[in-house]
Image (cartoon, rainbow, N blue to C red):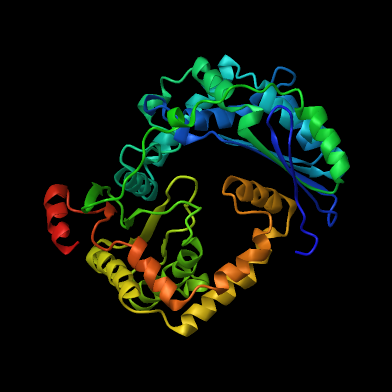
Length: 431
């Protein structure tokens, strides 16, 4: 961590640049994060952001999608696009080629009509396929219950009815609105000097025209609220395994209790090697499932995430599984965790953290997160101390504050009774 000294500057067009010199390998990672995505979609155009992401590398005003793919293959590079930007990793000798392609995608994506139709059809096929996966069906229904009218209630790929209506003008409007330099963070990490980085970034991105941004109040008008009563949904599917999701609204990434909740997660339901309480008791001791977990911190972003407890189990174990989740939630609220549990988790989190920042692409993603969530570039140094400060009292306090074993959402998908309303009422008494 001694040599970890990222640089930050802003181009005249508003592009925020984050740079870190890393000479350990002759590799450079380039990640452009655009503040776009699902949260900015209109309800009647759900899936638009995802469609834009799949189309970004299908061609620009200067290159076809095939040419982009051939160039990256020739230099042995990796290029990925998403609803929130572009990522590339290449050998340092090919940095100009990669910067040229990344900037071309961000500035000049073409969105040919035939490509829009092709990718839209792929998206529709993927949506249909997901409806045959009971786990995905359960998770999507769970988010619908938790998020209400907030944009995150929708599946990322949208709905069949909305995606069918998407056209090139929708794609272009979205791209031209959000893919602008003053709405973008560019992280470059790897084998080049700061002087070289400044020169090359100015060369390839300096002429990207700045545009007025959509007002924040218009970007996201729906604020999600926590639950005040249980919400229950059963979906019958002719599958041998039940998929159960239980939880409620979570936290934002800038929550000051994030670190205490991170420790709580690993004690309650996210520990390595099934060492957490829920895995140990529901999986190992009771044999209710192979896959089971619970956590609140991984989904935290600028918008509230979700506390999620999941188990895949057989129909006859449904009640035991639900009651097991609630019992462990209530226990971690009522009793302080043991010092042994606390120290084991803190040692794991502080000891394993450094391995998440070994590669240039990991470091590029870290820089963007540090910028987005105002963590500070000294976060890597501060993180172990932030974790070590967490006490057993802190864990109990945040469990009491942020977990709710009464007002939560529950979704069960599988061989549940077809009379789902009767089933819902029956379980509401348990819940």
